[in-house]
Length: 416
Image 1 (tube, one colour):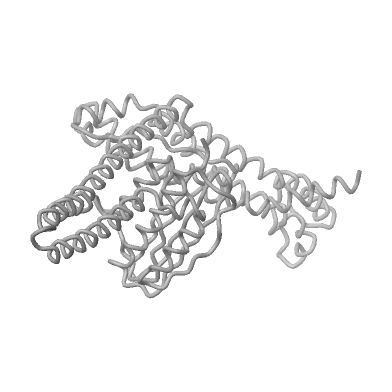
Image 2 (cartoon, helix red, strand yellow):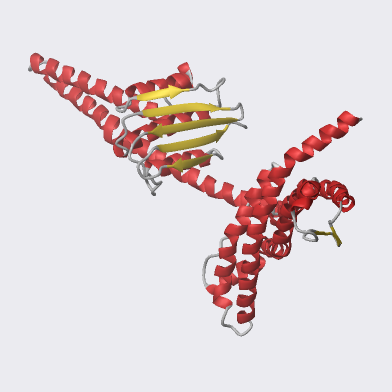
């Protein structure tokens, strides 16, 4: 039994510093929430006479980063993510005000803002004061005689004897017990933030539907662009060459009896043209789905890509097992596009491709040591990578500070 009590005491003591830190940061954000609530109140009052109405949408928008910070803090504390779902505040003033009123996320933010403005700083002060006071009470018997008589006024009595000094030591016990409950306060603050700032299931579902609608539209656009590219490649390349072969063979047929030597030359030219047409057809097929993927798997296909890269490229990691055909093809083209993009723009000397993840998620990371500053501009290679990932309900993150390095990370779900 004593061992169990001691373990509980040690566990609470270990959790105390993190809880105090959480509440202290909450005190800082609580002050910002207080100032934000006061500013919002002023804008609301001015809106009653019409002056503050145009500023209302921007005032609410300015407070969103504070709520987003609290979501991240609470999520880290509780170990579960808290989604951020807002309706975009766009359009004219009337539309923006209508969105402001209709969006439940704004009402949740205002509720949290009011609560945090009132409780954030007091809880932070309590989190700092309780442990310090417990330590001070425990140390009073050690230093009370070093101070002038009557200098320590402690909970309504003056420490001027060993009796009152020992009483101070006894007071340290309940104060310390209260201090060890600070993690409960931190947990309560995080849970309150989650309850107020997390979107309801309907809002999450609506946001998810909007995301899927957008990615489906992007996937259809990308599919249409891919079909047009294939049609253009076939029309301008292989189809033109095959038409030339037919024409050359027709001329050879006409020259066969009058000029056999010229006819033989035409046949040889037709053979060369047919070979070129076949090579172009293979290139088109390879651009749709590289045969090496089905024959040897993603790891071998990526190794072949790295071997052909103009920049020295190292492949690290290997996906465990085969993935769905669409996922492997997307990963292959993502890596190919990233290598091409780095070759054109990065001025890098080295490239690395890392593959990993779980059975449910394939993670690909392409890193170069180039000049950095890459951005996914519309119509560019990085935007194409993002579209490929989003078409499979995945995502792309880009980290490319000026001076490099550039890291492109793509996550592709492998579920059905």
